[in-house]
Amino acid sequence: MCGPRAGPSSPSINGFKDLGAKYEDRATHELETNELADSMSHWIENVKPYGRTALGLLIALVVLFFAYTFVSRRSAARSGEAWTDISRPWRAAARPAKALGHRR
Image (cartoon, rainbow, N blue to C red; front, side, top):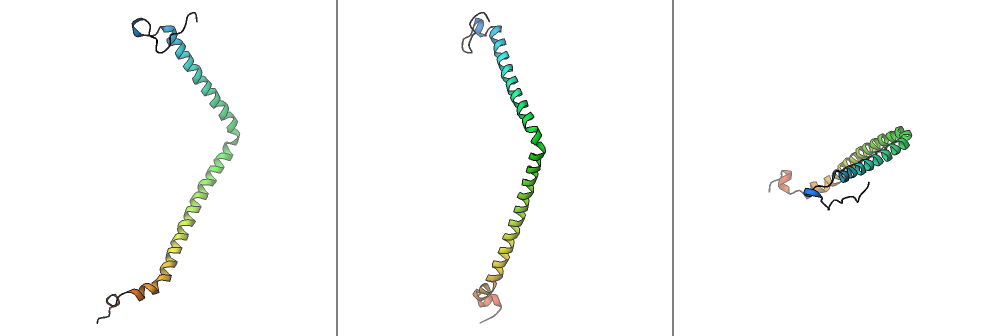
């Protein structure tokens, strides 16, 4: 690279950057992309031996979540039924005479 590189805000002839600067920008972008690809491939290689374990843990967590949800909803339904059973005598006593079928 012989001369100073034209910056993004420094236009040259006719408002366009020279071809060398465009090539350098593209090469820099490709280099950054390659570095990202390399780091991702290294990360994947490091994680690969734990893939089955991670999948097993994920499946176990999903099963536990659904089991907890099922048990929690069932418990709430039973609790609601219990409160209905407990409050039934008070609700019957609190009904007006018309609701029980008595006439004055």
